[in-house]
Image 1: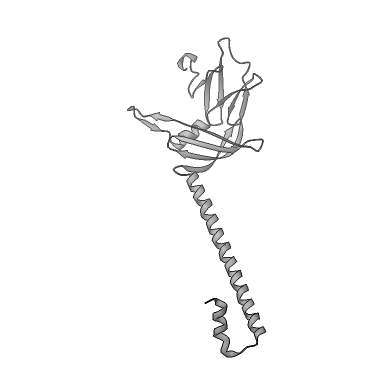
Image 2: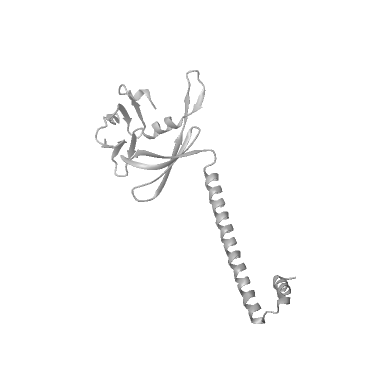
Length: 196
């Protein structure tokens, strides 16, 4: 038995005029439609909330995300850093408004020779290390915190350059081999024969 038939059966002994019964039935149908829409909208919103929350959880499964400020190419940059044991992924917006990603990581060796993943603090130290960049125009730049140094013409005949850098708190000594890496020390310039 439909709801309309139940309604008519319940009110049949009252002998209301048929036009009044029709009007009451229309109002009842409208109320059910509205509450049905409201229920559907609530269910859809709950499903979307659950889906986006699950996707965010799945995307960040097993890692710790945090907002960080660091120096990239001599400019202070806001980024989101996802850290997993010994590894990080960094996402930031560059000067052109495009989203960029970079990652890295590594291990450290304890005095007893055991290997362990780098800690988040050690990963941040790595991110704040000087960056040597070889540009398309042939120039060579060092970026360190807010410093941008053109070292293109500072290489000797052996392709080695020595640069002293200061970030306000500490001084580091950089030995750069042209297109062959660099070494850094807080005490002295390292000999190019000590690395690579």
